[in-house]
View 1 (cartoon, protein in one colour):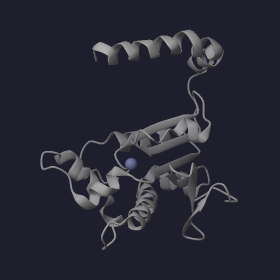
View 2 (view 1 turned 90 degrees about the vertical axis):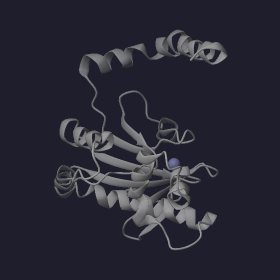
View 3 (view 1 turned 90 degrees about the horizontal axis):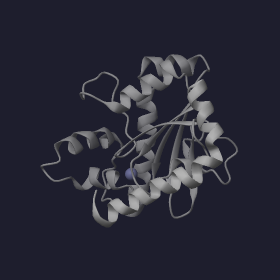
Length: 212
Ligand SMILES: [Zn+2]
């Protein structure tokens, strides 16, 4: 970065150091001395409008986070090549022993739209990646309602795929780990949480529990 953008970034870094850090210094130093012990793995879409720490109110040390285009989970069989997301899942469950995994999609997701509409030929990695959402696609024109429904179906599909990871399945069956599917509706400021018993997404503002 250079020019005005670089100047602004530097200014933001200085702001963090001068204004934010002093207020939370002890917390950061404790996290260094004691290590991180986050209880949640957050798998979210890379979309810039999704701000996990704002939604959850989490501070430093609370969310182990991996984000990718579409909040997708690769199959555990390794058939799709190298995957940071798979590595993060294994690390979070086996090393950090997180107690919950959240898969968070959102409204107006460009990844889900692109899964319907296609991507430029040059974007080979993206094309292969978006195939992870294929099973969630509906055999209809992607109108706003179909897109929203697909975004939710994609979240459920990733939860199912998580259960193919042996360490995830073991921990879930032992009651040490719970899985959560979220659909963040940007324009409502509400997260709709997947209720497996009802097979539906319920707005968090009225939901009685958050477990999948
Ligand atoms: Zn998205």
